[in-house]
Length: 365
Ligand SMILES: [Zn+2]
Image 1 (cartoon, rainbow, N blue to C red):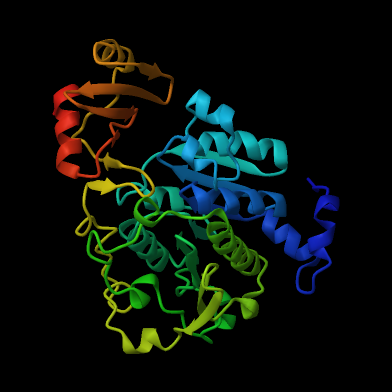
Image 2 (cartoon, rainbow, N blue to C red):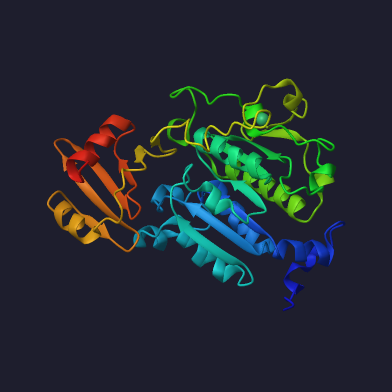
């Protein structure tokens, strides 16, 4: 089957791109880790560019405060309580029907990331926390999949394309920015996550749309270079941009790998992937909310039964993806959302212990 390439004419004009580059893109699979501010911009541009298969994994649904920066979503998506991955799939189907989208409503964790990454040519970071980035990095290094890190908060952001050694004996990385070596990995560059409370989040310092979209678009550029085989064009430095301070900095990081004692890429100890590091309750960026994951073998939840019970406490919304209940508990109001995989998001608190308490009280242990 030959696809019509006419719509890609303007990018095929670029040197090193052409019809060959376009065919490579159409034959590629990108895994988008998260579909929030970074992820929607990346998904939008990658779909328009004709990356043939996008696998979009996101655990969340769309809120009104997302619309300020999450470009694929609109007010109707908020009203319909559509999960982000599914809303993105529907929107992209209207943007480029040549692109296949697999939408997965799930939390990315050590138990599923390798399954979602199987067959992916690249991992694109749309994450909002360090812990899951270490996990993505473990997966990328273990399987030799390029991983394009990006992060933004406030008025600033950072991005860097990580090219690990290929595990398939390919020579593609020989033209990588680090010569015939792998680039440093995420853990080489960021040895440890900042302690809780010291890491600025969208919740504490806010975020402006352009800070996220400039970083996401840089990630997209790196992704297009990698997928079209233009590895000599991949940015060899860690980019940082601050749109309020008007600064753009390129940090040289290629030497970091030689000097670091990285457990991940040097000793191939994949602690995050093996579930030895990381926690089960995560405060969510940009929201007064905590996510609880991996409830013990809960299996499928009976949404109708739970919804019936929770209606005693406040308004309940049920659809095929989730149950969401407003719960008035003494003088506080929580919003509890349960997903089919047993995951829960408790809104109205930033504290894991309070969130666990609400879950235990209204859903059970
Ligand atoms: Zn490393």
